Image (cartoon, rainbow, N blue to C red):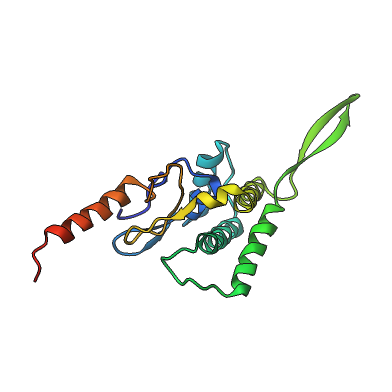
Length: 195
């Protein structure tokens, strides 16, 4: 992969995992797919199917902060062998605080009386973009606090920085591309003349 792409490399993942995977690696560097407010809007549209006004720059910062916090929570939860296996407690607690705080941005429905009828009225305490990020954070809280957290895996293919939910017992990598890369490297090691 030479640069950002329009779609996810790992499909059918929960929104928090998809957000974590907006950091990708190619042959040269780590690539951030959330490079602009427009990129954040496109990601939100892809995840929710809803239209959004252009996010404010502060919302882009909040989305990246949430993503980075989720990646740290995932690394701790999975014992991710790709990086440092010890994380300072204060960093982990800060990441958890970011996730919990962002989850509080969700829109909520209040019951109201209108024309003699009880109706639900959606109340935004933040912008629709921030509320959508709140939904993602809330989904992350439910994911990491529940049994689904046991299915989260780091992709351990060379140069891969992605996470995936293991949906099949034999699944080892985030995508066929990573699996092919690992198999090709193994094959090359077997047939390469020993020097």
